[in-house]
Length: 211
Image (cartoon, rainbow, N blue to C red; front, side, top):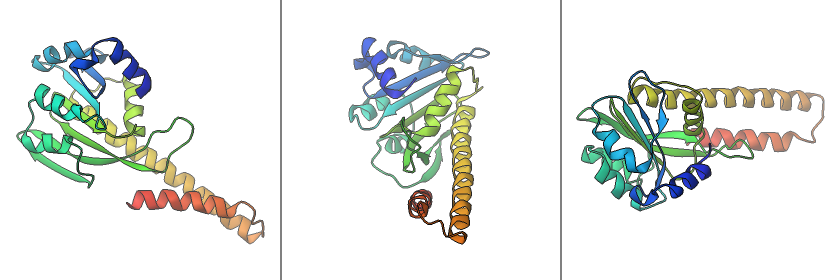
């Protein structure tokens, strides 16, 4: 399910309790993760077991205020979740790892070469993530949860997000290498019609990854 469909479901529920929320999940020990309605988030966060994932849209300026009220996180983690910074960073305070990581933009019609930012704070039982644009690895892990993925902790869930991004980048780089090899073959045989476009696409991906 994509961002748009989630926002529709939230609006049909009581989104005013969780402005900017894209989705929320809760996993009880030994059970599959389940979507969490906004009205049930407070109780889930107060529970002594399992984990909760809150994913918010940082374009909505109310999102950070809601997260600050709902989640007991260090001030430095809340600062990250404000979404004002875009530089990659990783820090730790009072058992909470927080920072800004990279992810490819998620596009429906094509594979994006644009690198976005994922703002996060994660502890053993809570993962809060925020973004300004749908992100590919985040969407991939969300789909995997719906298909039966069962991370034991919020840390394990976040590790899955990181590994999904690394896998995607590895596949993209392998595909780019093949395209460069094909361009080289065409140059050798003097078939020059499509090489400029292919080189432009590969260059765009390389520049995005470098940034």
